[in-house]
Image (tube, rainbow, N blue to C red; front, side):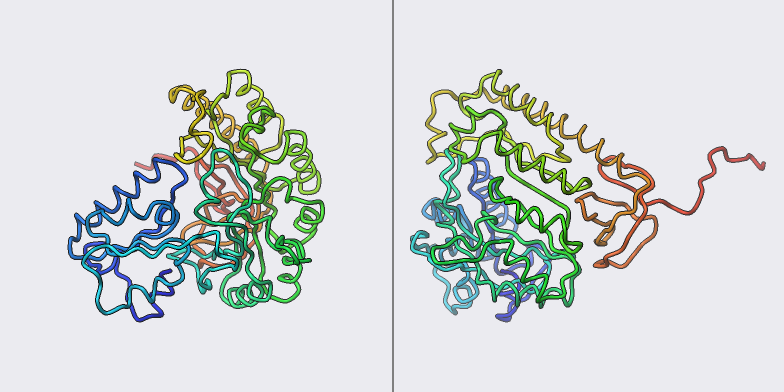
Length: 416
């Protein structure tokens, strides 16, 4: 969005106080996310009462009427009209009262996303969205109703964008709301693995990384491609949510624990050093102590290297929010703590196995990120946006440290 606004002649400024226009891109995955958005609007208006505020994203799509009445809000633009934002804000006469631009997201049949020209901020790894929407109906999730049905970016468009990015960046991250569903529209014969092969064959990108892919979309074909190519990051992220079969059924997830385990164990067998991560939720309605322990033990048994652990939060408008069997918040948070400690232990074990190894990393502004998704402190400064090999010398609190050729004097001699 920033790139599109700059292309229209606007200039970015470092603080809200200096801005004439403030754009807030919103999430609505939980009620807490909605609350954060409202606080952000009030804060922006307080810091700069004369600035015009544009609110867009998922909250804007779901409940524009809640946002348009907030102080300072000039426009509310849903996901259905997001790519029109540069034209909307360039209108010479802004309305005194809030203006809503929201349509039926389910009417969208085509992939709508502005082209990604560069990495935002000081990042060196552009995130290229190639898929939007979701056809699943998980009982806890509002996203399909604010993103619409699954839609894929045209293959030729993706190839051209990656080709352009490859001339300036070493790594590009492919992302989507449900990335593994790329190419699944009626009449399409291509799948995500086919697209990736085109990217490898037709662009000079040095490293591709896949963001989150649903478990059953990690086909043998896709896993084999990731495992066999030196230009694809060895990184498998597959949302789990729960290791309890009964909880997964209530969530309306489309796989069972045995299916999930098969994918993860195959990924580890084919990629012994890969990062393997999952999203996990604690305190889903009706989750008993027995079911939580079932989930914890399942997670313990698998070769995860990291977890994203979420405490269930009611999202009004979803079936789960209406369940009478809500788990007390204190219990949800305690279960969250248990899984976070489990994740930290697994991650530490994984990082310790990397000491003495040589890893391929992409340099960031002050550190680096390894092929297998570990943060690496460099022993000496390197320019950002370089793909280099580094030897790992030790673990840090949250990552790794490059081996330094300089020895450290352990017992300094008093020369006084």
